Amino acid sequence: MEIRITFYGNLDFFLHPTLKEPPQMMHVIRRSTSVKDGIEACGVPHTEVGTIYVNGVLSDFDRIIIGGDFVDVFPITPPMDVTKKSFLRPDALEMPRFVADVNVGKLASLLRLMGLDTAYEQEWKDSQIAELALREDRIVLTRDRLLLKRKTVVFGHLVRTESPWQQLQEVIDFYSLFQWLQPFSRCTYCNKILRMVSKEAILDQLEPLTRMFYHEFTQCPSCGRVFWPGSHRERIKNRVMNILKKRGKLGLQDNINIGTLFNDM
Image 1 (tube, rainbow, N blue to C red):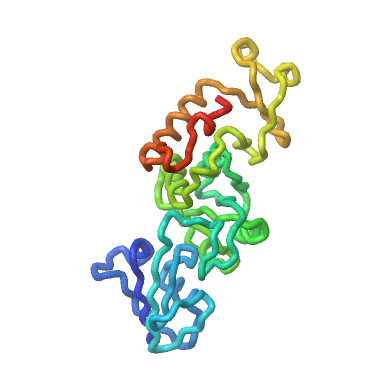
Image 2: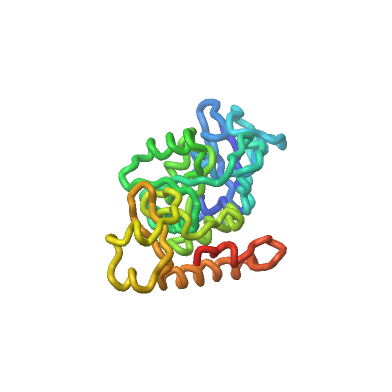
């Protein structure tokens, strides 16, 4: 039995790189299968799919397809708002929260730096990441297609870009995270919300020059690390502002107040 599955838009990224024709794959099956399994047999993780039609009728991932069926598969059109329900994902998230695998560990640190709740442990296995994503309603970020094909992963994104700062921009753009950014509010090591702390309380942890020139500090309630507005913050601020400028997100129409965004600087 033959099932024709036609992919559209940027889903051709997942198809065979030597494909010269439009991204259409004829998937031959010997038995009935679900739409999800049929799509993923062609190499496309279900997390990258935005809309599916089977024989012209809107379909979910669980529909069983048989020989002679025509399946049209469309990508997610960014920006994706995970707080809104969709046909394929009827259970929306309360807010964008992430879990990253070891392939994008530096991205996880940058997301935390931007104040975005991002779970990450270098030793986590794929099964643990998928379980955590389901249990805590998190979006999986990875460069591993097999991880995204796990059925328990509802929301996920295959990171395309290479460098951590490019990856940060990619994720911010894809999920339109501008309103959720709270730079320097979260520990980059353990993901906890930082607390204001008096200089006297952490004086013994400071180097002499830090004691002399800085007077405002935050501390992680979990690992105890101390943070202060050093020169590195200005460099980070400039990089974030460049991301916002490139995407035209510094205008009033986007309701982003840069002064508020970097209030702790």
